[in-house]
Image (cartoon, rainbow, N blue to C red; front, top):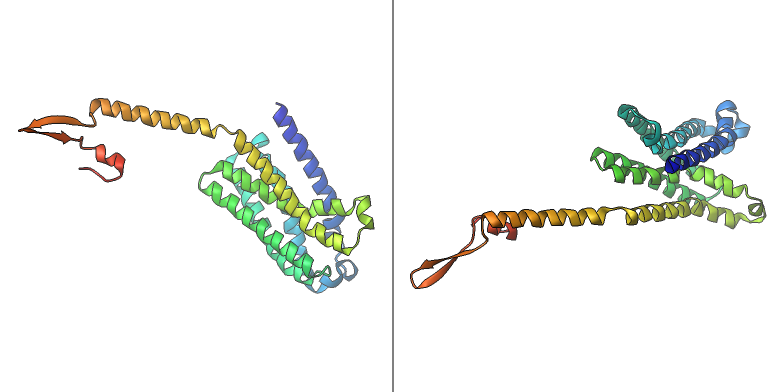
Length: 252
């Protein structure tokens, strides 16, 4: 119960900050298509509109997928939402790579956000490939990484709006362009690693090994591994027909 409440609370905070960002940063581009607002992106306003729509969709669908186990009961709906999220990430990532070339912030920002876009798309694709192979835990891990990377646009704006940041220079702003996604991704990896440390995987491994040994002992009782027979003056050692299989050789 406490975990469910914490999940809903965290999801509510994430959605609130996402809606705040969309209302202040994304919605004006959709409501006021004019050269003054778009600036140097006006000749490429089509690319920018596609980028804003796809990014907004990914930002809203991410929490739906991450909290699906708390409220979603239809697997088909979860699959279609996941496909929509993946498509939005791919479209937003490719348009970001193109638009960053014309970013007035310069080459440092371009490299930072192009790298972010590639890693973001790659993590979303890894989440899709994992669930296609039935690896649910790996799918959830990669989906979390993907959304943390996509959420960079929100965290970047939050850091830039801090009072102390107003007194920093251009170099610090460029530094935030890198730290806004590398630090959250590192924290996410620490959280995922901590969850793996607490998982009961080693105990399950011990149980599997113990069961395998039990099966081998039972087989040995039915078919002894080795018996000696008299063959004239010499003793001959005869192994069972299936003993060589365990040595990786094959039947004898």
